[in-house]
Structures are given as structure tokens and as C-alpha cells.
Image (cartoon, rainbow, N blue to C red; front, side, top):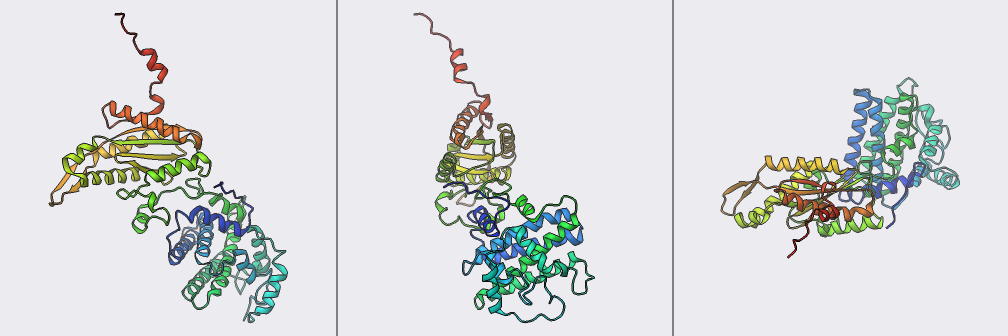
Length: 441
């Protein structure tokens, strides 16, 4: 599958598709609509804390894109009629206030007239084709309709306060629309359009407050979602699950066969699939790429001394340590019975070496705790022999893992509980030059 490309100036529908492609398959696949709405509410609250409690406009600006991101996730989760976001917005705001049908709005003070669905629909069909659907074009539309009203009905309110209050009000109405969606499915589209109208107002006003070279709204969004996950720089997101998510989640549909049943790490099948994806270009990661192979020392002795259930406890213990020392973007595999692998994007061999030294030290300081079938508690230590290698392209990953595997054997030969860098291994030519000729018979 080819790598999907996006750009900053894309339409608002493309942003929805992009965010779904990045986070849908790996991060949001099992979240319910309620879960996603709760995330959106939390992000709105954090943005408000930075705006009004801490008065930190820079920090608040980092959460404005997240509000939009979770709104897109909510739309992708609900989407009862597969209506695009641009349509949702323009059906409600066809380049005019939906109540007075004017731009700028003339009914924002006093009692609003009733909605006229027939006239609103006619305006939509007449104007939707001429209205730009990029983030900045929609922002200009909302600014033209309502920009003069953002200081409140009396004209004396702080626009930032008034806008945030209205955003919060619309958040509550989105919640109500979700609760009664089984009765009024179209109302969600209406309320999410209102919510995003005030989100655009918040982005505009925040830009004014920051002043100077404050980015346009599409730049603000792109800085948070630059066509891939900002943390792992991949599409779909390559980040491993966090501990809470691991407790709540089961493997994604279609990925059950890719999860190791004992450690819940990615299994050998997932490892081979990732290697194929990297080699074909379907999967891209940030460079350089560190590849790590890990062998458990004397694992057979553990099984022979205590039993296979103790061996399972050791595997889980090591997996826990690896998760704690790895970064969210790193992908950890149980490749075979006593072997693990780690793919570390944007990581040098030296950095990977340091990370694995920390793993080795952590195993020295923490015992495996195992309880036998008879109820006896046994504590014992395990160690690992590690090899690390670095490569510069996805096509070289398989070879780098082979080099790391060879380095792990040198770690075992050096006395176990060691980490060996592939670049420190003797070359075949060096070994050959050191061999002594046989004595003449």
C-alpha cells in the first residue's frame, strides 16, 4: 500500500481523513463515541485552564489543534450518514448566518428568527460550490459572518472569554445531540457545525492575543498534525499503547494473530509483517533506525528449575522492563521463545546501546516473582544478552536485525548480561587476517 501524502493547505475533509488514517487504526479503533467525546471535553477544559487560569497563550495554542483533532475523531465515530465535515458546516452556514441569512449577521442581538430549512437548503446548493473548503477559507467565512459579534451582545465582553463560553455551551449541546442521536440523528451535524464555528473564532482570537508572527490556523493545525503522528512520524501512528490503554484494550480486529499471548507484545508474525512493510515502502519511520535483538540468558535453566509457568513469569517481567525503558514510538516484539526484538525509529546505535544498558541494569535490580501451583512464592533474577545495530533506510532494517542478532551472540560469549554494538564486532577480514597458518607436517 503506498504511503499517503497530505499537505497543510488541504481541505477540511482531508484533515478528517488524515487524522483517521493516522490514529484510527492503532489508537482510536476501540474507543467508543462516548470515550472520544470525553477526550474532546477534557482537551477543551485544559485549553481553558491555560487561557484563563494560567494566562499562558502559548500553552493554550497547543491544545487548540487537539480540540479540532478530537472533533474529527468524533465525526469519524458518529458519521451517521457519511456526510463530510465541509457539508456539515456549509449546510448550517452557507456563507451566511443560518437565521437571518446575511453576512455579516444582523440578528446576533436580541431574539433570533426561526430557521427556515427551505431557504437555508437553497442557499447551500447555490453557494457550496463557490465556498473554499480549506481551513483558512472556512475561517474567513466565519469571521465575515460573526467577527463583529465576538465581544458579546453588549459589545463590552472580553472576546476571548465570550468565545470560550460559547464554545463550552456548544460542547454541551454536542453532548445532548449524542445522547438523543437515536431520535434526532441529523441534530449531531447541526451541533458539531456550531461547535466548530466557535472553535474557528477561538483560533482567530488566540492568534490576535499572541500577536507577532503567530501562525495561521492551518499552520497551527499542521504543526500538531503534519501528515503523520508527530511523536513517531509515521502514518498510521506507530506509538505503542500506554499502560492504561493496555488494560482497557484488546487487540484490534484483524490484529489478534499479531499479539503474543503471554507478553502481549507484537509476535513473530507482526515482526515479519513489519519487515515486509518496511522493505516495500508501505511502512516508513524516522531515521536513523536502531534494531535490537535480545536473548534471555539460561532461559532453559529457569524452565527446568521451576517449570514453564515460571518461564512465562520471566517473559512477562522482561516485557514489562522493555516497555518501561522504551519510548512510545518504539515497537517491541517477542520473536521466538526466548528472543525479543525492538525497532527504534529516530535512534542511533549509541542511543540504543544506552537504552539497553538501562534495561540490563533494571533486570539486575528487580527480581521475577512467581507463585507455584502449590502456593509457594519464588523470587529469581534473569538477565539478557543484547545486540544493537543501526541503519539509515527502511530497506536495510532486516540486515540490521541480522547484525544485531550476531552481536547478541557475542554478548553471550562475553559472559552474558552484556550489550554489544554491531559496529564494535570484528569484521570477517579482520578475523581472517588473525588466523595462524597450520604448521607443516
